[in-house]
Length: 327
Image (tube, rainbow, N blue to C red):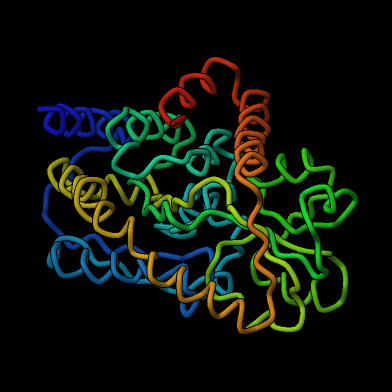
């Protein structure tokens, strides 16, 4: 019953969001898509699965053409590109467009699983908040296991050693790095290696995959546990969305939110375990914080990020969303 009611909500929300007449003919809706990273990068693995499954399941109705990543459009401009029609779809970081949708970064701000978040009204509320900015929020491709750890160029013994250090972040991570007394440097994933190699940064925050081979000799310490969760929004242009019938809109949304997302949320477990071993083999020192310090760090990360969300989006909406995302 709850799933049925949510499906009904989705249908009515998207009708209001698109405000575009239903197409008279059932033409194939062709969608040009871009991603936050180049095609071969590991983080695109579930998006490739999504594209392949949509193009099979919705053959004759929808066709996604994944054009590429930053070489097609800069990552921090992709959401705006979707809004203005330069491209039809993006699979992106929620923190890359907080200037457009101030609450987008909240997709990272939880320790819940996708199933636990989906049981709330969080995704429905995000649909409304994106619609206010003329963006269609199809849903998120979750990766709950991919939280964000700190990689440092030198050996450190604890969080106190990070004070004054320059640490690369994406926008959602900026508040926690500031709270640790370090200097956050915002840059895209593709720029991290050069910045580390040149000593422009002392470390960086990133997920726990695909770091050992690239950063061997540049990273000495990795600090665990990681914080937050990964979740990658799929955004669609409003006019492109309007080319679909209401029925197709609802079926595509239901497929992502209630089928595909559940299947890929735990895609990464073995990869993470394997990559930790690769880090050790590459000479990375794995620093596990003591339980009490880890708990304080995880709470500090949440409080710092939500304070910024409240300042940018308003206390009321921040409290509403946090109530859905807090454990």
